[in-house]
Image 1 (spheres, one colour):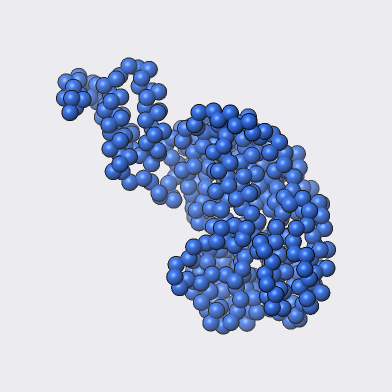
Image 2: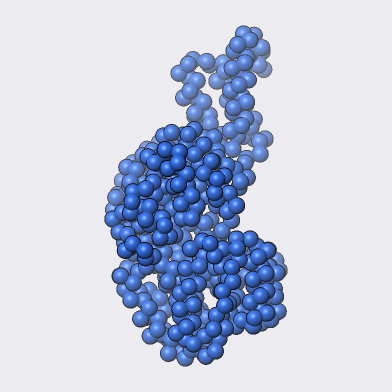
Length: 433
């Protein structure tokens, strides 16, 4: 009360500055109160506005206790990045960790050692992509097509076109086609319950790849009565996230700011985010993890939001993006805005983005995983199912992954895979007998 009474006696111009500061503070309630108080202290103690400081601290406490933190996934661009903690002096050799991340994990074949038994003939495989316009949503399915050709199986490809209504319809079409197995790439099962139910009623097994909801990733928690895939093959997304974090920290010299431009629509993005943020938390970098976007925003909206963010945060030179197709849009937008001193890092290892890295064109690294191996793992697990065998654990069959920068890129026009390290294709064909 004493503070309030004193505030009433302050001159009109001081009141206006208090109101302005309070309003700005309220607009920033999405950020942690502890961090905000620290920033306020640093700013206002220097100016010796002790009375204003007291009022702001009171207001921040009230907001922290009664406010509604922002959880909006479409938030275009947050106002301020989260501050880094005090230097941790952890003694971590980030350079060594980054070098290890740029190798291949695992370093040799760690897939199933046991044979599957004979391969049944005449199977019909339906392949449903979340969005055929995105390379990461089709690459493992193309490998499955090649394997089907060699096994004498037939297949049909369906494009989910990036929306759940179309994805459900494609699964219904696959059921009508008489598929023996349906493999859905990069789609959360929660969004395709209609299709999963129709397939279950028809006795058709539905599998997935590049989704990140089966081992070695945490299982997705579904509501009672919701259907899931029979199994899924994906890399260890959390481990991949740690690898790309190691690269960022080493390249930045364990200092500076990084913004996480993330998408919450795909379980794989959520799984990778866990490892990414856990590793970044061990560093001395300032991390803003409150920037979200949706697939529908990939284009002009995402470009405007990223450019706006970087304009308001000129010290932020590292931008992590959830996946390469969105990163490609951002690269072009930053070039148009003349912001080519920023370093973009992403995930997938798409050829277009690999070429950006090769050219030194804004994007500097990407966390890549072997989509070709993923296709083999899906078929291997399916053959085990057909022959009444247990699935191999982890269900991702220890799918290889790496971090690519300008020192370890694949040949132009090719995707990264681990075949230059070990011949896993020969291993799988040796099992299918």
